[in-house]
Image 1 (cartoon, helix red, strand yellow):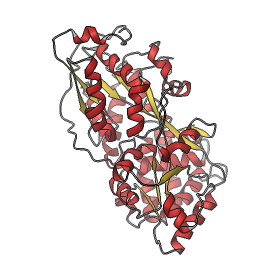
Image 2 (cartoon, rainbow, N blue to C red):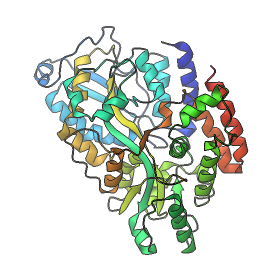
Image 3 (cartoon, rainbow, N blue to C red):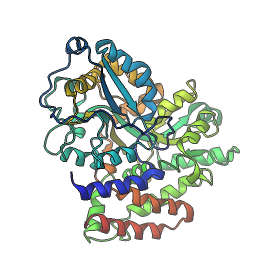
Image 4 (tube, rainbow, N blue to C red):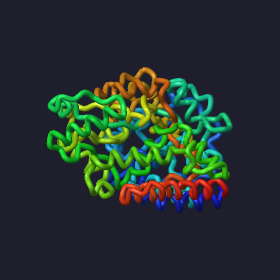
Amino acid sequence: MKKKWISLMLAAALTATALAGCGNSGKESSADAQGAGSQGGTESSADAGESEGAGTQASSDSEKIVLEFFNQKVEAESLYNDVIIPKFQEEYPNVEIEVVSPSDAETVFFTRVSTNDMPDIMSIYPAEYSYRVIMQDGLLADLSGKDFLSRASKSAIEYSTYDDGKLYAMPYGLSSYGIYCNLDMFTEAGLELPETWDELIACLDAFVAKGMEKPLIFDGKGSLAQFAERLIGIVDKDFATVCEAVGKGEGSFADADKNQVRIFSEALLELAKYAPDDILGIGRDQGTADFCNGVYPMYIGGTFYMADILAGNADLNCTMIPIPKPDGGYSLPINVDIALGYYVETEHPEICEAFIEFMSRPEIYQIMADNEGTPTCIEGVDYKITALQDISKKITGDDTFLTLVNFWPSGWRTEWTIYVQNLISDGDIDALITETDRICKDYYNQ
């Protein structure tokens, strides 16, 4: 274990508690983070065989096997507990899977990594830098060459593959970020869905003119890091490369040819004008509830919000559109949002692998796709979520980019978000430019 990295990662994760940045951001959960899990073994997971047909052998063993599944998709907790795991137990009746889904999942996860308290099975974000370090440190079992990997799309496998050419987590879903639009409210206002930045602002102005003072909502309390990262990536999908250049002394974001932070700041401040004045105190739960109840016609968020929207109002007539680029067109941020791997030293590698294979079966993942909402990358699954049909098609198109958190050093986004908060509070664009320069120099010269 690289102790220096773990210390940095833990510090960043603890700072991020109020600025949560992954799919579970700002989502409350009754799950308890207590419990050490069942990893305690010392044998390596050496080449566990394909799990199809392995259930009979496992079922014939009278010993009760308990596995811990650390789930970072908090919104899917009940789905795992009530539907998917019981189906798995039909094949493995002697296996109990305990789902742990803390609300501050990423903080808890990296705290546990730092103390070598690893769960058996875990959901991770395999394209992101922080999780790739865990792969580098040899904490995850190698899934390369497993037959069930062929069930995922080639792009998802590519995004999930580590630098050594091996795959340590099976991808199931690709997420995106955009604007949920209440179609009934648009129809009542006589408005078409916007496709350009100017059309977006015109729609917001039209709602204001019709008496709706604040027509836009987003999670400014728990997911601002996520929103800001996506928005600046929309401004320039290669922004992380520019950050590295600035960090190495090759210019400043104050330079005319490096104006990404200024464009981002102007765009964010323009959107914030149409959001509640206390937006930095509004979290995802409140934002989702208000959108479901028709308080706001537009809600900025991720495809992974869909499960909560369906739970809040299953009859809501809405769709997601891309956030337009301020200079025209769109560029859609995507990330590997659902992926499962298992601890290399678990006592039960064959059962862990069996669960990962089980989840990849089209008839099983269909259940997840129908209820959790994240667009799937599992072939043979019929994606039926009406509100995300258009965006799920765009995810497979050419106008996409892998979210920047996958390229920034650990902690970069968390620290930067502190100054994005300040920007929303005081409107000082130059201050954010100065701090972005400093953060780049700090992180790219460690």
